[in-house]
Image (tube, rainbow, N blue to C red; front, top):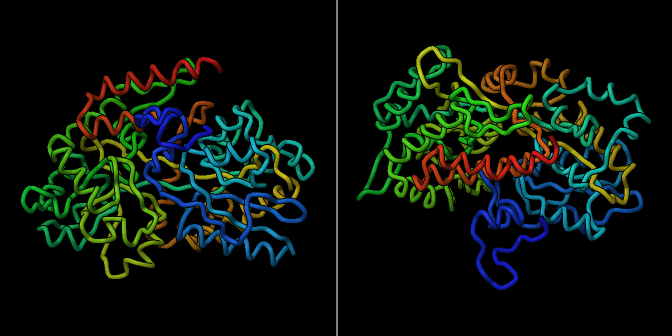
Length: 464
């Protein structure tokens, strides 16, 4: 993934799929459900470390970026170190800038990598293997035992560690109680004490909140494929599995996954795909069903602006509400279920700190990583941003979680996780292409997901 251009060598504009293949989502100038970032050096200088300096690259924006800056300042004071944070372009699955820098010998010492892609990046030879670093300290097992099992599994490739788990999260159905009341809905219908709402109940509520002016939506009750309404979200919600470990097969055509995509197709058809997209383009800085820019949440997150009744999101917006939504009465409940009595499903993601190949200060990088992803660093990050820690001892510390965050903390105990595959980033991107085609009603779910399998499985077969 060396190119982040929108055109090929002949000036021909790339299709979305071609751009994804060449550089991930950022090849389109977008991130998928995340933030559109500009290259911004926080603290001065470029990616070159050397000497006693340690350079950490991250794709995060504010307010998470600000939290990391405070963490690095604290680390420098405590250890008399010289570490700095550099914000770079990228996304969950796009590391074009990192790849180019590693190959050019100008990469950082530490990189904040979406954890489920670590296996693929390790296989590509972009990451340093960390066994020797761990053995010089207390051994691999001593590090492994500190972290949640699924989070540690995501930083391994062929049984060897390539990173340290950082934060994690869970997802639920956010709802604006004020907007629901104004629309004639009793917010108590979404009280989590009543268990997960059904898809039909959420549809009934959403239609009461929807408002149009001249055929265009001015406010909406729910658009299920935006924000954290990912392919994994609805596949899991409808009981689907995305990977058959025993057969070494990706399973995007699993009946539950197809059912989740069918739900999205039907919802889009009822709303009107063009009308829903027009609302997102106007109010959420989206250029596709799942390509939205939430760089400044107080301006670009429609839920925070009071024009969306319900939204599937994670725990981190708790911090946004503290800063920008103090006047909003809001709540969170379980992700909707297909039928009454079904068990709600959620999933957990998160990031990791890794050492890219060719790091100029690998020893200093390792020392920073242990602190950054250790108890002290993760405590600071959780307190500042409302992300959940992956350090098991911190998850038992009740002082870290207020009432709303405690809800997400409990969800973590039953959360699914994405399969940590050596084609994990490719799988994500192809599922996103399928989701967008379905949400725009351009393809039927079965067809779109069959194409995912056809494109991803041959790449996975190389490792089976």
